[in-house]
Amino acid sequence: MDDTQALVQGSQYWMVLSVAAVLPILWSFTLALHFARPYIIRYLQGLTLRFGGDVWWLSYVLMRDGLMMVTLALSTVLLFPNLYMGLDLPITAPLAALVLFWALMAKVTGDSDDDPKTFRLVSILLVIASMLYIIPQVYGVEAGNQVDALNSIANLGGIPAALVSSSNPAWAWPILNVSLVGFALTGAAMFMWFMRKVKFEAAEVA
Image 1 (spheres, rainbow, N blue to C red):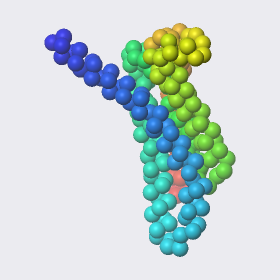
Image 2 (image 1 turned 60 degrees about the vertical axis):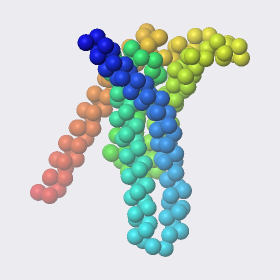
Image 3 (image 1 turned 180 degrees about the horizontal axis):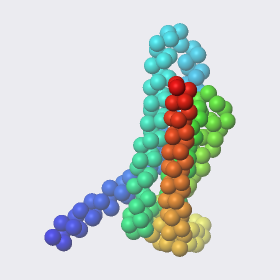
Image 4 (image 1 turned 135 degrees about the vertical axis):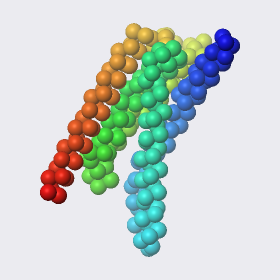
């Protein structure tokens, strides 16, 4: 029985750490697709077939927004306290997920494809969110095993340990709690916006 529990727990931890290691790649692709919008528009302007342009644009939008949703879904795995506090994860990973949630909220409540202000807001939020995840992942989690080698080049002190959730609980717990509260408030705000929009549309139909 103990061996079975150890196997299940080990598999769970391996899966979570694998997700944490893959997320920088997803963040990079998310940024690349988002900032590829001007290139896509220039390419569409050169197409002579309207149907081909519509298919190309819809494919781009589906890939871009779908990748953002996948990144957010995988990032929410790191919000579980037993995993976040028990494993070596980026200490600001919950904040990265929260800021990404804000970017998606801006896309839902606005039009980032036609409104330049909304596009800039989403761009800023995506850059901040990616930095909150990739920097502690690289200089904390990945550098943690190379502290001795890196100290021979530059004295890192306790920087790698401070950027890992399991080795810095004094900061990890507040970050996690703030992120969870932020998710709850953001979800409530989105729900209220949706209800007001439905009520307004119902009043227009009536």
